[in-house]
Image (cartoon, rainbow, N blue to C red; front, side, top):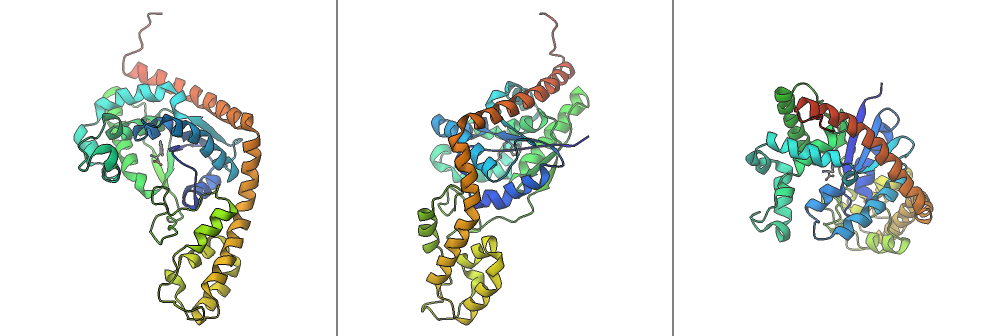
Length: 336
Ligand code: TRP
């Protein structure tokens, strides 16, 4: 029997190269060997976008199309929408008894996010909502509603997984051994850096290359990417290790990497030339993804059917799991 993978992502914006190299490539490797549930976490996205439901709804479809276009295979992976599985919300309520408020306040991932979202949650987190503070509880429900055994995530998600395991242990110690403690698989590609040289590429950081970016947008972004500040004239020798253009050559233009590197170092390659070469390589890299995406954009019913089938499959698993949970918690009344 294949082990079960459960992973998720928040539908708040299109996928960028960071998602592709950090998560997508990993998921594509795993999809053959596991029973794979991929949750489009719209309920979690609402915890910090409750005032913009249209954005979340739109991005459920956008993200699904992005994932399909990078080769996450709907024949192997069950794509489902979190809000459509009520058992997840139900489990969240029961799990909320098993975690203290102070434990949630100490969760490093939650803490870091609250600090980033001052506009929503106040300068010192004084306006934090019950829902956002509690999203790790809901994420524990995401995983355990499907008996998720393995969760592929980036290291920023580890505190959430640890919190999930604590809830599982607490649940099992009170109500009986029903739930499985999930293990992580860390994404094995390190984070992709941003166009500005920031350690992390991120939508909110404004330094991302999106899979849906047009050729014009790619040109503009790469033309403005950060290069070695010591290089003033076209034929000055430079240090590729501090150049974002070289960094992306390393992602999408591996075959020419040695040439790029040595010409940069010996001053025989100007930055504009080097950027033009990267733009061409980036477009070549993105073209097959764009083509697949175009197909799905032109066939919205196919996308909906994938979500419908995946959600129905996930629903079955959650229904079975919830029956066990209700019985263990003695809330299975035979009154109907
Ligand atoms: N918190 C994850 C993120 O922000 C998304 C997510 C929701 C998730 N449910 C999950 C990840 C369950 C792993 C398992 O990217």
